[in-house]
Length: 210
Image (cartoon, rainbow, N blue to C red; front, side, top):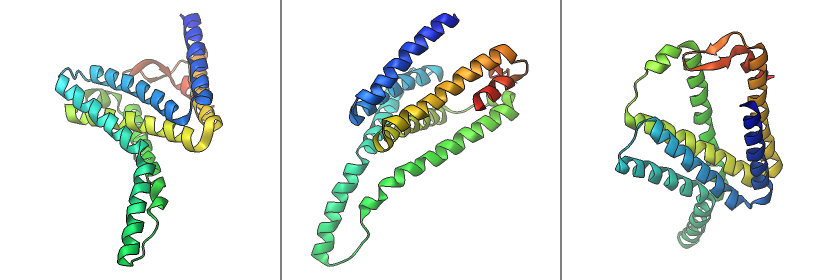
């Protein structure tokens, strides 16, 4: 089992590294988008969404948001040209709208706050988290938001900060996951949250943080 995991992880890591360094930003973003859509399908299955209409709406909302974010810079550029024309025609001054290109990065803040809150709830009240009943719409929104933010972060990280920073970020996740697994396997005695994930231990968590 462990050997199979190592082989699979090695193959996947190799493919990811090749994608990070060899693919242009647009194609890298497309690959991440396809993986995100696979995750969306899993989320819909997990939340028992079987209606073709609801599934189609979810995918349409996710793809539409991706296209909007991907086109954000181009939309600002088009809006800037229009405003420049209007400003010249009607003789008024305004700030360059191109300076607002970084607004999307603020979307990372609610995503981070969401995960912090989620971890606090799971850690402090695992039974409450398990018994929490959310409507299909709320479950759909959570899945949509988490998947969209994950795609946006990786895509923009690769586009604006380059291959090395992207690989560094991914390597942090891989190393933390590997450390948590082996530390937990060897020294794990105190369960982190057995109701949620029986295999996770406090020692494994410290291994990941270390």
